[in-house]
Image (cartoon, rainbow, N blue to C red):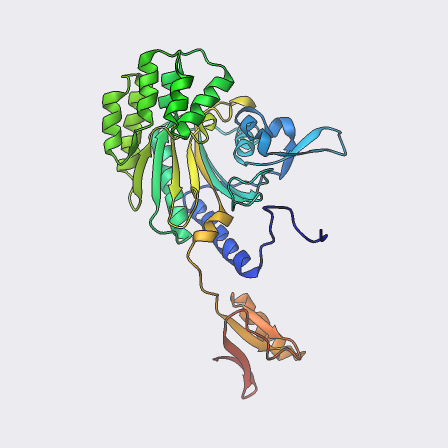
Length: 382
């Protein structure tokens, strides 16, 4: 095997794609700042017990592990930034009231999430800490939608669910972690026969309600049907009421519901959502409420947020035109060098043509040229 062959699902990002990724990254960070989110930059690696604490335990199989040569302790390369941001909120900032944080950086996965997925996503996310009301959930939903829109994604679909529904139905049933995970998997896969087998010893009202969940997906009428067929438990009523309220405040997206959708169930404690677009094989953004995220760090408080992979987003985002540039000759004359420097200070891209390369392909869409006319260096259209 050639020494320069990269591992499976790891790839170099070449200039045109890198430019597109970087432009979207800047737009996303600017959008988050417009909403009042502060940027944080967690480290790429941490002590393993910190990365895999609390909600991070579900990421164990996705986390690359190594030994710290300085301390001898096990360290991990982050597979998700949310536990790190929760640690920052709990231990480093420790603010009272609302804190809005955003982040953007690479994460590493031991396995790809799908056949064409990368093991090195570029994760962008935003999170609100300190507010338990639906206002925070709606702000995160709106920011996620605006983030996809600023990336020039069209026909966005929002699929909503709520972790409290299944939690309420299973609350009084004695289940170990393995049994609970198997039920979650059967619900997520809509496997009625497997679910029936797993619930054979459960009360009939519970098994019936969980089986009904498999059919509760579609438009807003799903919520009305759920009110009729699911038990009248307080948490279920609250979940359905909150989903209805959130959906009524969303515009510019096709909203649907899948009450058996349990992807990331262990992570979330309330309303959750996935956002889709034509051409994408999986959700482009996922998020929701996860009020337990800071508990392991000694500061349990309300939290809601979302994240996305900018690389996956770029793959389906509309192509962007090259930014216009100015072509200039190379030279040592002080007047020429001063003119070039002045244009760059004004934000222009100025590409100097090196001697002997005048006929090479223009990669920067140079639509103007710096020329000398009447003893002055001036910019003219090509």
